[in-house]
Length: 166
Ligand SMILES: C[S@@+](CC[C@H](N)C(=O)[O-])C[C@H]1O[C@@H](n2cnc3c(N)ncnc32)[C@H](O)[C@@H]1O
Image (cartoon, rainbow, N blue to C red; front, side, top):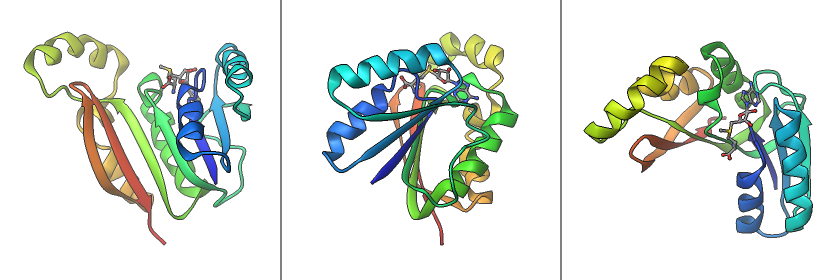
C-alpha cells in the first residue's frame, strides 16, 4: 500500500500510519522544509520505519498519476496560501488511485464560543477562508473527491475524509 503525507513535517503521521497498517506499507512524505525532513529521517530510522522523503511544495507533486492508495495532510494546509491549497487538492486528485481516500486534518471554525475568540486572530492572520468557511468539500468535489466523513478531533481541528470517484 502506497501512502503520501503532504506537509509531513517530522513524519509523526507517516510513522503512526505505518504502525497502524503494519508491514506492507510504503510511506512517502513531502515537505517544503529540509530541516523538518532531516528530523523526519532521524525519527524514521530511530523508529525502524522506512520513509521516502521529498522536498517540494504540495501543489506540484513529483509523482505519476494514480500512484497512491491514500493521501493525508495534517495541519499543513493552514500554513499555505489559498492558491497552494487549491493547487494541492488538484494534485491529490491526480496522484490518487480511483476509489482511494484523501484525509485532511486542518484548523477549522471552532465549535466552542471561547475557542472562536481565541482562534480568530490566528485565522485572520493566516488567511484560511477555505477551512474557516468549510470550503474543502466544494473544492474537492470540483476535483472528483467526494466527502465521506467528517469529525472535529478538537474544538478547532477538523478531520475530513474524501474518496476519489472513478
Ligand atoms: C504544523 S506542521 C505539521 C507537520 C505534520 N503534518 C504534523 O501533523 O505533525 C506544517 C508543515 O507543513 C509544511 N508546509 C508548509 N507549506 C508547505 C507546502 N507548500 N508544501 C509542502 N509542505 C509545506 C511546513 O514546512 C511544516 O513542516
